[in-house]
Figure 1 (tube, rainbow, N blue to C red):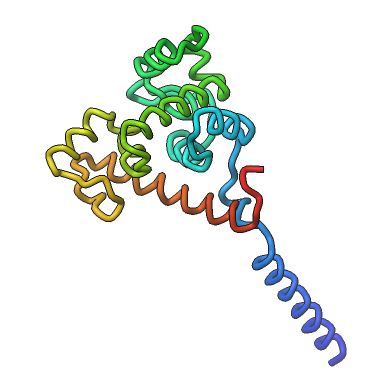
Figure 2 (figure 1 turned 30 degrees about the horizontal axis):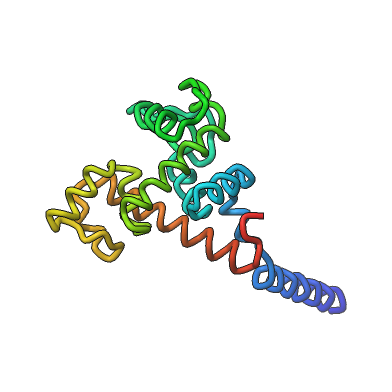
Amino acid sequence: MKLLRKKRTLLLLFLTFVLVLFFNSNWMSLFYPIHYKEEIQKYAQKYNVDPFLVASIIRVESNYKTSKESKKGALGIMQVMPDTARWVVKKAKFHEVSLEQIKDEPDTNIQIGAWYLALLQEQFGNNKVAVIAAYNAGPGNVNNWLKKGIWDGTLESVQNIPIGETRHYVQRVIYYYNQYTDIYEKFGAGMK
């Protein structure tokens, strides 16, 4: 009987500990980690973009895996298309970089991706949902959908995006964005 009581007491203490840990810690960050925080913060601040947006795009594009190349040829952790990367490097007057650097160096890839997101933010009046759609489908397509009234640029009408891949992409990025902001801001951890 004493042994059973000790086991129950230990179990109760353990469950209490787990509940305290669950409600008073940032344990969810284990399931939603953000890698390359310094690089993300550096370029997000430099180009005035939300670091959680950058992190969410990276999570959806490559899940933080470097040296990734898509079937369509997108490169690196932010999956930047080679033509877009070359255009950004020229337009932003960055030092010339090779496609290998864009693919293999997270710092270079994040800088190019963050600069491009800043441009999209400016183009779409800081409409985060339209920026995400444009990052995936291209700004020309998104402008066309908005001008023709096919899509109004809101998350509520995301089902009207005519490209299924983009529709799903927007939903996934927003999902991770909400997770990151909830987890990291809730506990005052930010991107640190």
